[in-house]
Image (cartoon, rainbow, N blue to C red):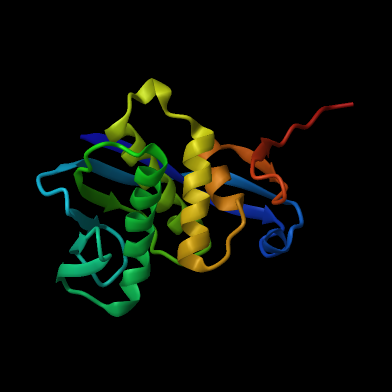
Length: 194
């Protein structure tokens, strides 16, 4: 089992400008989404359990081939987008790695905040899902943060239709970051005293 602790983020400057190619400044917060991820018994399914998160769903099983929710406990249609971040992140990770045999996943997510409050919960779930997928298929010392951020950003682009690299790169690398969207990375914000 892997325990993935993913920080949330706050945008200090450029919240919407970054989507249009302008720089932004964002920082991670000392508040985290916790993901417990283990291999599942059935390679065709990703089982998801949400704890302490304000969404009207407690658990779901998703068929990885069709991305269809096949079993839920308290299912609401608006929650499907949250689940799509997880399934798409794992799908993109597996496409990147091209492992011979796929595995199923059991994922439990604990979040101190609900989604859609502007703290990057979808990006944190995308980053955590990619990191857990990479850890499942390869040795931890080979995991590259740039790869995590890139796959998580692509996840956000597909699920949302458009996304800047701000949230995923800030969350992956942590700290106070200066983001130039045309260059998919988040540089540390350096300040010098003169």
